[in-house]
Length: 106
Image (cartoon, rainbow, N blue to C red; front, side, top):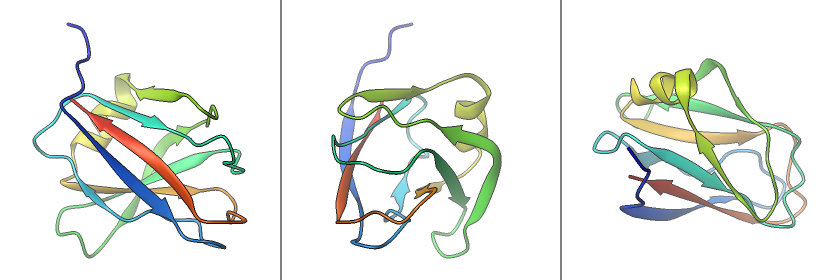
């Protein structure tokens, strides 16, 4: 089955920060994350939550950013994040300015 985008949302990492705002994903099953050209982190991990309050790092799920492109989240990574109602993305290093990532869901 082909991935068809049903929704996209901008997620922001603040200047000097590492973590995006959260997003609810429980109505979707396919995901991709697009990185801006100025993104400086070398990897991104994902945190999950059932209540949008207490977040835990999802072990073994790491995305390697490709700037100016969308990176699909597939296989066991997709299965792992689908266990949570809310997720956040965490850059491996602080960003030098505010960064807007786009999260696509289908």
